[in-house]
Image (cartoon, rainbow, N blue to C red; front, side, top):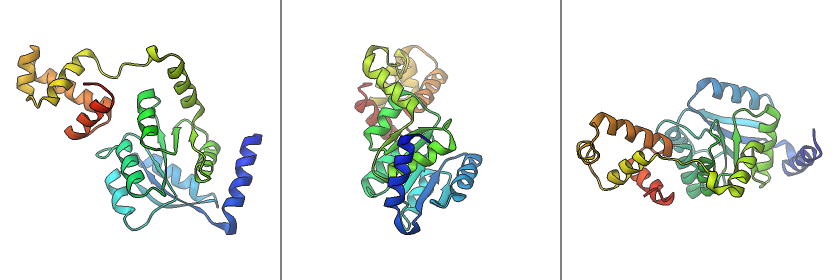
Amino acid sequence: MTFADDYIERLFLSFMKGGKRIKVVLVDDHRIVLDGLVSLLENDPDFIVLAALGSGEELLEFIKTDQPDILLTDYSLPGISGLEITRMVKRDYPQIKVVALSMHDEGHLVKSMLKEGVDGYLLKNIQQFELKNAIKQVILGMPYVSPEITRLLMHDVNHPAEEQVLLTDRERDILRLIAKEYSNKKMADELFISERTVETHRKNIFRKTNTTSLVGLIKYAYEHKLI
């Protein structure tokens, strides 16, 4: 344990007096991940898992009646994304700390989460101790970002021209036409490509922007100056 880890642990013990446990809700669409996290946290006296859920929709229904101290959520989820979850939870339940646990280390995704007010961003390759320490740090009001993510963000700040382009030129063309409410056939005619190719581009655009609805996509596009 490093000096910083020991300091966090002592602060945490002082903060959580009387044997209080951190109430955690987990959201991930992979059952094996949820089972592993439940086992890890429930075997530690500092934590109690209130629920292990497979979607954002289940989460929003659950927290209507029982709010956790910490929401630990994946970024990529079916239906409501981790980004949208963060936005809604921070708007409606600002007392809940939100920590993203994800495989995604793309700079634009991390920045989007930070912009929405996420309290921590962790990669799924972290050690068990780092996960627990991160949750404890967040509950103390100190944001936590995995070291790899910190290095990535610092690189982007120092080398802005090297940031990865999110959409290809053709995908941007499709996005502009989507914003104009063109049908797939009209887009295909406009760009001299097949409707199947248009549909493939549409799917890739939604996947890359991690949006699930037309309204969400257009909002994302304007926020990130894609159109």
